[in-house]
Image (cartoon, helix red, strand yellow):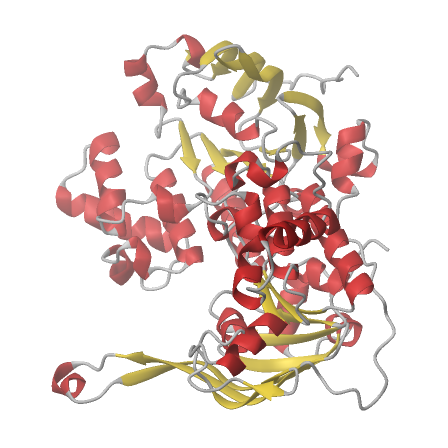
Length: 550
């Protein structure tokens, strides 16, 4: 369908992109994209992975290597960016247009302090002295809300939290007072409350400096909260754009309607097990601590400890989902590792009525039997699947450990069955068993990870942020698959996440964790619709409050 562009602004836009094309060899990945952004405006560029939104932004700064870029991108005071020489573009980057990247840990130099990285820009772009650069770096960090900015300026990236690293990236982008900030998924790797904080920070800075912001994201809740206008991309084409309220209230394109409808849907068996049913996972007074070095001479003779989980109590019933929600550092992943028998712990912990033989990491026959009962699906399927093994080897690996008597043919038949259960059939994917993980999309890789966990017929699946790395439409498909498998197989899920919408869609019960302690717990509606603890109230409010598709 044709796209109706909004009426031109009364004054010349800050940036006007016309008929942008990006091509790698014969493959055109961005096709005829046109949009404009006014000074001081917040425009969101929305689409799933592979839609071309990041390439569109990078091409404006001519940062796409080996690409043929055509079209026009007129920036106020600079002319057509696509016609400038590389020397002229160096003056645009940072001075006029700055960029905040998706993953600050990979975008920041691990060998330089945060202050030194900001000072490098200040010296290059503004010609300040060393002392002036150091002071200006501290002031920029303070402007972004980092506590103790003078101390943090001397920290390396790994010494900062995820939110602090992203604030440091924003400080670097603001160093040259740009007219336009390109923010590429700046909150994807952050917890829900931190996402809100970073968006509020960008809004405040935008108002203070008058800069325009182009937000690249697939998170529609962020778009509603942040942007003035939205432009939707699908497979390299801009299919719809307009004011946020208009596009979300009455989307014209089928793809936009599909994106908006892709919020998690609840489709679980609501009936609770009969009273007195023994739990498949039971924890009482659970405590997990890590040894830490002590300063000075004390450290020669004994170790200190950091208590990551203390006094945690929970129970997971058969065929039910227990959601564990909290921010990074709350202890939820440490709790999951203890339940998986990957960390030593104190207190009471039973899986299927049995306790781990301590230390839990010992591979005794009893512990090996427990490992079959509880399996895990990790957050990022690309890093959790071996790139050197085929699909058949990855999915069938557990059978070699737990059912070594199976023949090669029997094991292959079980692998084929497990793959079919998660929607990966050989007739749809030729040479399925011989393929490697890189030959699949993110959603397909997560299906492989689920098949690998299910093939040993566990009672409990620990789902550690199973959809946070996926686009919204793929997230909905994976959640639907997990819901179907739970109803068909009677599985119990321990769902670790910071996404309140996913908890609402999947969980029967929920516990809320902060600083290693369980603050609140109960049936999911009771806890999330009427949270008692102030921390839970903040989490729910940051997620936008109640609202799930039925």
